Structure formats: C-alpha cells, structure tokens
Image 1 (cartoon, rainbow, N blue to C red):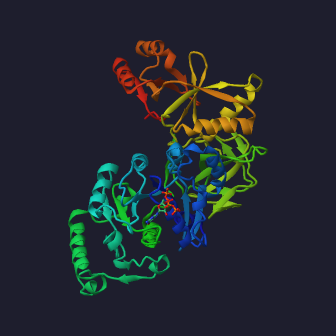
Image 2: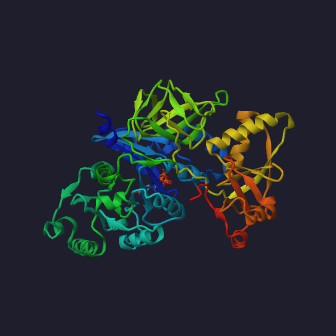
Image 3: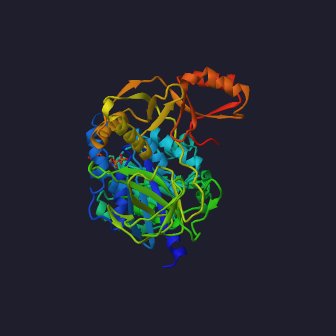
Length: 529
Ligand code: G4P
C-alpha cells in the first residue's frame, strides 16, 4: 500500500469521559467490532478501579498492566484505528491532557442520567482550545435519564459546543425501543440482547411511512416524527468540514453495555473522522505527507520490574515513516539514536515492527534519553508545540530521609519528573525542591517508587501554594520586574525547563500581583502564548 494510503486510512483518537460514563465499556465494544478481542472483559480488567484512591498499590499493579491498554489498535473495514487510552481518574488528568496532544479526534462519552460532569468539562475545554474534532456519544439509554433535547442543551451550554444529532433515541429506560439513525436513515431496534441488536436494522428513509406505527406503535411514531421535525428546525445540518474545524459536534445515542448504537457510531466515525492532521512545531507546520520522519514523545511508562529500569517512551509519528534500526535525531540531546526493537501496539499486545506511519504510536525502550515533549527528526532542528504543563493542585516540599542516598534521590526524582508523574519546582531562594501534583495520590506513588526503584527515601512537608503561575515579563530588564522578583523572592521557583514560576498562595494574591505589576504576565500553563 502506498505511503499516502497508509496515512489516509489511519484514525488516531481518544475516548474521554468522566469516570463511570462508560469509556471502558465502549472501548471494549469497539475492539469487538474490529475483531481485535473475542470477548468482553478483556479491557475492563485493566482499568483502574473505583475507590482506588486509597489503595495506590492497586494502582501500581494496574499501572503495570495498563501499558498494554495505552494504545489499542485494530483494523475495521479498510481503516487502521488507534485508540489512545486516557485515564479517567482525576489524579491522572495531566496524563490525559498530554495524550490529547497525540490524538487527531475524540469521542466524548456522557451518561444519560448524570449529564455533563466535571471531568468531561475540563477535558473538552482542552479539546476545544486545540480545535480537536469531537463526536459526542450519550450512553446508557437503557436506563432512565434526561430528555434528549435537554441533554443536548446541557452539552452546548456546559461544554461550549454546537451540536447536531446524527442519531436519536426512541424512548428511554423502560420504554427504550431503539434509535433512529439520521446519518444512515434507518431504525435500529433495541431488544436488550447485545448479540441480536447488531442485525436488527430496518432501513427507513422516510419516517412518514405508515410502516413506522406498525414497528414502534402509534404514540412513539407520532412522537418520533415530531422530534425529527424539531431537530430539522433547530439544529444545523451536519457538515463534515465544520466538524473537522471543531465548529460542529455530531451526537449519537446508545448503550455501550448492550452494544447498542455502537456500530452506528463506529461506521460514522471511520467515515468522517480525520486521518492524521498537520501539526504545528515551533518553526513550521509539519504535514504528515512529508517524507522525512518527525514525531514526539507524549507519554513515558516506567517498567514495573525494578531490576530493569528501562522505560517505554510513546512516540506519535507526525510525518514520514519510522523504521527499525534507522538513526533518528534526538533534537534536545543533539544526537542520533537507533532503535532495534520499536514496539507497535495491536489490540492488547505489543510487538516489534519494522515500519510505522503517521498517526501510529511507537513504543521505544529507553534508559533515560527521553522526556515528555521530546522531538525526533531526520536531522531537522524543530520542536513540536502543545505539550504544556498545567498548574498542579497540590504542593509539598520533598526532603531526603536518608543522607547516604542523596544521589539516588536526585536521580529518582529527576526520572519520575521526566515521566510526567509530577512537576518539580526548585525555589530560587534556597534551592529547596517542591513537588506539585494533580492528585494527592501521586505523593504516595512517588515515595513508593523512589524506595523500590531507586533505593531512596523521602518525606514531605506541606507548602501552602494555591497555584503555580508561569511568569513572563514584558521586559526582563525593567524596574517593575526587578521589584516583582525582589518582593516575591520567597515564592519564586524554576520549573524543570528553567522557566520562572510564581507559587501563589491564593487567587487574591494572583489578582493583587497582576494589578501591582501589570507588565509581568502570569500564565496557568507553561505554554506562554
Ligand atoms: P468508565 O470507563 O467511563 O469509568 O466506565 P465503565 O465502562 O467502566 O462503565 C461504568 C459502569 O457503567 C459499569 O458498571 C458499566 O457496566 C456500566 N455501563 C456502561 N455502559 C452502560 C450502558 O450502556 N448501560 C448501562 N445500564 N450500564 C452501562 P459497573 O457496575 O460499575 O461495573 P461492572 O461491574 O458492570 O463491570
């Protein structure tokens, strides 16, 4: 197959949702359609379970397994589909944000009874910012939930989207009869038996056809006709370009658990979702069709076996092909590297591959060469944009608890930060180290891993910070900036990339600081534009 065809047939996407909306169930059903797994439950068992907040050992165990679910690839029709796993657990939100830099589109799962939830709002905000094409799947229609129109209103208001339904439920919960598929113009009847549902599709181009009453009953038929009329009047017509530009989001309804409405979603997805898109680097826009390889690291996964400290760096191929044993240029380290056993992912397995294409994810064994955000090229000096750090929510000093092991501690902290487990800030005044995390859980994970993987011991001490603000002065030489640095000395730190950060103790402080030093700009992410 030609290089161009390989690119065009790839669909690399993420499924995002608030925990429990049905992301894992939907992923599994998609894999079943692709013939990638034979039975349900295969993905589910790898999921970080509810209530795991108090049991980080369990998370550690599952973190090990989850390498295999980091990328789930399968073929469906003539398409190669790569699903990138995004942890729903809020303590791992940063991981999800980073993964969103490597997807070309997303599917958002919403629970029909719970509506739009907090985590969904945050993740969709990031997708919107990056203009990622979004499809919405409203799940659990076999249960009682909100009215479909109300839900679409809520999606528009809370998520800031412009939606148009491509399928619509006939009844809900106890009265759920099926869905009308506006995209394919047919009716899919719900029988509650997930095996049967797939075949029970009745072509129905004209809902005025009196056959409709016979199939779903007079009242539901009247109601459906009214609803479709309303949809026609109120919602914009679906237009693929608007969807690709992030201006319009199609909505599907179904029940992942019952494998209902999933095929419709998948069929529409493969036909409208984008193949790998061009990506902005600091110097230029890189097109996937370019011959030369470029790619970036969006995730690093530590080996669970402490005896083998190698890690797996996940690279998204942006352009060109990635070939085994060919030297590539590591831009940050200014050196060429060769990889003898690059991994590709297939369903739940990973295997060594000779060649990968744009849109694919390659896993590279790494002994410490890579950091998140690193770029590989064939010699060109460029860096991909868009892997910002967000302000952590928790901050603690980290202290060395074993003076004999100071080196090990430094190395461990350094490597864990490269993996993106947490963020390190070094205070300007006294060089003390502060660790910032999204969830309190990470402190336990870090402590445990430092001890077990690096033989170092640490303790923590509270440091009352509300938010980290990245600092960008209009003029680094002006008096205002000098004064800001002098007055705020105690709260200034450097992040891992030597960027200046102001650790503010409250929103009030941020406001006051901004008013007092208007030429010193404060940002809540490390990407300062
Ligand atoms: P997540 O990855 O988004 O966190 O959600 P997950 O798929 O694990 O689904 C969360 C719960 O919702 C699961 O139930 C799952 O079975 C259920 N679920 C998913 N889709 C549907 C659906 O279409 N209809 C209904 N009624 N339930 C659905 P659980 O009891 O938490 O787990 P389990 O014991 O069933 O595995």
